[in-house]
Image (cartoon, rainbow, N blue to C red):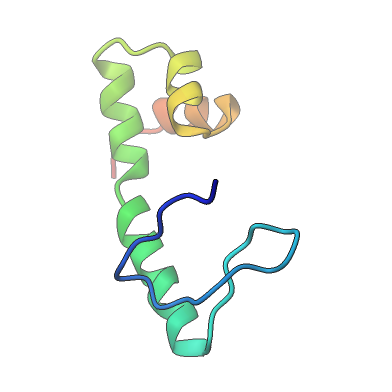
Amino acid sequence: MMPKRDRGAPWLGSVPGMGAETFPDRAAAEWALRNWAAAHRKRDDLIRLAAAAGVDPRRIQQITGVAKSTITRITQRTAS
């Protein structure tokens, strides 16, 4: 079963056999990239806060999909 699509998403379909979204034009692709960037802008801060709250790096990795080496790098760096 296909996952439910975001009704606001401007893309139309999937690449046969790939399950990847396709975009009707450059504007739609840029719209999706801007939304992705906005959603991920606070990634480092959220990972740092979760680690400070006692969430194990392994669990952060399981939840986020971020590599443990990246989590280690983020948590060892001071907030900017």
